[in-house]
Length: 301
Image (cartoon, rainbow, N blue to C red; front, side, top):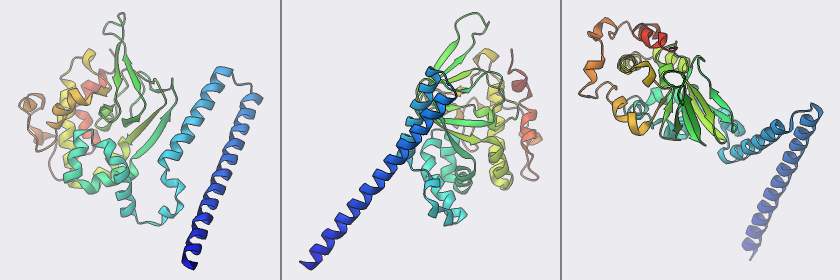
C-alpha cells in the first residue's frame, strides 16, 4: 500500500509539473504574440504583410515544437565532435539520400558524410510567397525540400512564350547541384514557395573544405564533378534547369558516381581524365571549374 501511494504521488507530481510547464509556455507564447502585434502596429506595417508575418510566426513556432532543434537541448553541447557528427547524420541523412551520390557515400564514405551533416547543413524556413532564389543570383548551396511545396519557373527559350514551370517534390528532387562543383553557377529561374516550406541547404564551401582534408574523398568528389558537369555542358542552354527531378535523373546521376557504369557515360567525359585529376597532389575546386567554364558562361542567353 505504501509503495502504491508513493508511486501515485510521483505520477500526480509529474503530471502537475508538466501542466505547469505547459501553462508557462502558453503564457510566454501569448506574450510574444502580443509584442509582435504591438510592434507591427507601431511601425504601421501594411495589413497584408502583417498577416503574412503573423501566419508564418505561428507556423515556425509549430515546426519548432515538432522538430525540437538541438539548440533547445543545451546538454548536447557536452558531447564529443564525433558523437555530434553521428547525431546530425541520424537526423538529416533521410533527406540527403534522395541524391544517389550521398546514398552511395553512406556505404563507402560514411565518416565524410557525417561531417557534412554536422558542419555543412542548415535549415531554412520559407513563408508562402517567399522566393528561395531569382534569376542571375550566384548559387552557393545545394538544396533539398523537406516539407511544403515549391514552384520553379524559368523563362521561355525566346523570352516571349509561356515560362517553363515544374513542381519540386519533397524528399525526391534536389536543387542547384552545380553550385557544389563550380563557383560560377548563376540561377536560371525563380523558385517560389507555394506554401510554408522547410528547405535543407548544403553549403558548397564547407563541402570543399571537408573534402580537402581527405584525399580519398576529394578524388571521389572530383571524379563525380567531372562527369556531372560534362553532362551539363552537353545540354542545350534552353534545356538546363536549376532543378533535378529524382524520378527523371536519379539513374543518370548514379552513373556519374565512381565505380558505377552507364553505357553513354564515356561520351560525355573529356579524355583523358588524367589530365585533370591524379591521386596526389589533388587539385582544388578551381580545377573543376576549368572544364565547366562553358556552362558558367551560358548562365545568360
